[in-house]
Length: 326
Image (tube, rainbow, N blue to C red; front, side):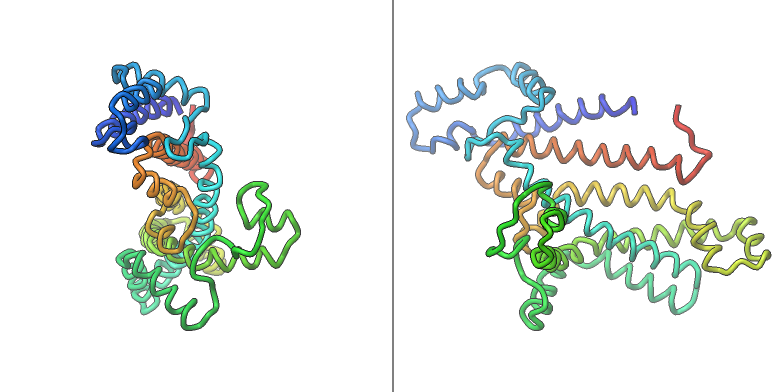
């Protein structure tokens, strides 16, 4: 916990330095290349770009500590207000994908370890190898072609039907439609999230499955597992009640890392499926050279990644009582 502040401080320095190392003048980007030099000079002074880098950094840090991410150079809107819907869209997609990955990955790994060196084990690990090797953009296009174009089961693009007006409460559409009591909109939103969710869950599922298998194989060798079986307990209870909890700590690490990565913005998936998430938001900001959005967006995503991994570290104590935090 004590390492969190210096890590965040160091991260802010890195993000600030990288953004200012990008070629190009933000003032020139805003006004255009044919703008009057005096106008560019005036705008640079208004944006504080004429000040030394260390002064700009301290002003940047002061705003961040006050919860002010700045204003978009393109839309002129506060970045905090502008980013919330995009961040919620990415979070909803990432959590949905991670639920799929955990359910299938953990059970696939358990099945593989439980039936070690059988056709089930070989088949499960072959599926995991295919999943971790499969390009997301290719899988996304195949999903669109098969389930949208050929079978016409699921929508191709977007987060919801363009004809639906969803009142944002939490900005999580699945939750908002349930709170509004509109089951029709809920099923529409669910249909929109299935294809990108599956595409995004493929690699985490494969990684979780392989880690679960390796961890379970180690735990299943222990004496207390043999003792539980000798007492006549069914294999299902031995595996899920006794072995899984003790094998879950390394799996939890992988889940935390994968969730942090997904929350960091799945640019490819969001671009292919037209999902209005933070990855697509930052991609458009890079194209527009909106440095304020890029800088703040990267900082927010990096902070989320660090906090998610901190939560994972704290959860270790639940799964392994030998671990204590003082």
